[in-house]
Image 1 (cartoon, one colour):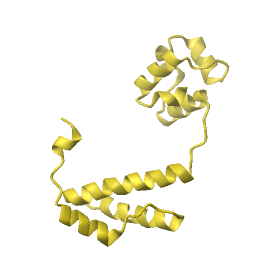
Image 2: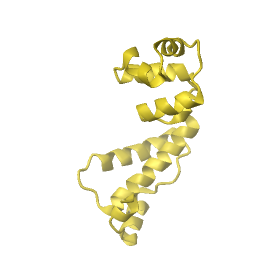
Image 3: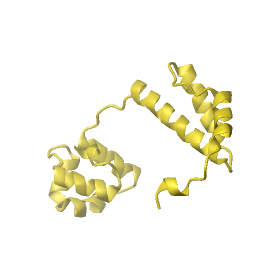
Length: 137
């Protein structure tokens, strides 16, 4: 069932009061962003949010993410380094990945940066590891 179908109706007046009290303008400085992060954190700490607070928290997350994407771009990581980092993070070993790659030797060469990850392999890895395919391209 789509997310929208499960969402409780929002009272526009309650949402407007919440927004007016918080003034969630797009941040132009670190201080603005920090204020929005603090506001979002205070909502995240609560167990039961009203539908209006839930929608407001989603809005804050989008605004904060936009600011951070513009001001803190992630450095480009070579695909083989991304794969190695994912493996380390998930405690995966060579033997856990080579069946997806299809060959032990090729897996070693990819992990050492001597061979590129093909687009077909990138798709298989992305599916297997549940990450965006662009990580390996």
